[in-house]
Length: 471
Image (cartoon, rainbow, N blue to C red; front, side, top):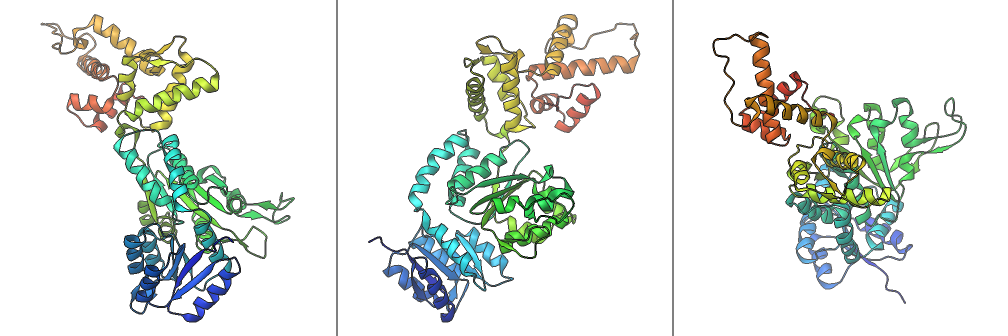
């Protein structure tokens, strides 16, 4: 006979413990009860439990102390906390300390059963074993920031806490959100990704929450919303800062109560999902400006994942470039190509305002232009960069100013025919082109060599039409 899961219930309200025992026994879960912190420690010392559910307030201590003791003596045991309404800050502190999830009082038996089923469905070790494969397959790179990100993902995967991902545009927020889902015990459920900035405002409520037939003009049949589609899995809200304030109120209730009301419906629907959100904007600044609700910010901002920009990942750039070359070669059914030394130097010297997405675009464009076996510098440069490189080559032959460390040309006793301003602008442009050529168009390095700030360099590049931000 298969062994029944054993769960420890810790709460000083004996009646509540009995109700939870009755509810869990219906789904085949055996329980023990403890009513104090010391009783809970004694139970944990004498039995092997599959999960623990504890109240935050105990007569001789609190649930955070119990969680700390479990982390030290029973590491790996899934722990969920009971919290009264309005105790959200303490509940979030428990999640950050390693709790699996929390249940609001009064306890909803359905939510309690769903939570513990998720805690018990999959043992910890197989999930961690699977993590090693998925992490390296989906997160390409060996840089220190990426290694730290993998470690953090392992910890976050076991939790049911909301996750907030931040990082510059193109750093791979949806890839990481998908990885959080696939490493979690919700991986058999759906992963629903929503770009909040891509949904028209007038359609947003219907898209997110669904609608009933006849609820508005054009609603010819019932429609399931995207939030309900995430039932049993994970809901990824990309660019959440783009949500209008009116939708933020409705989303807060859906996330907090795990219930939604479709447009035109008289009743609510229970929905079980984990929310993962992302934005490249500073949500705290938006809260201060009144453009993002503070209560929603605290509700989604429990676990943080900060994605590093590509320019801080060193040789990961070349690993990613090789990955994209082989991926595109397979998709296009063409032979894989090799990067020349000059091409590698160019790639590692870029600033990458568009990050990994920009690198993918550069490689795809190069693969389109290249008929050779090797990808070289001209294949990787954009049209403006190639044109400017050609201008630089011509200037190098015609003027000593572009030869490296040459002195400025002397006019002798003559005056510049084009006038002083135009003459000085030509010299300035030549120097900028020379610096960019020497640094392989790495504007950060060029600014340092010229002894100016990056912002000052960008201003001058824009003045001469040399800015390449469109890449």
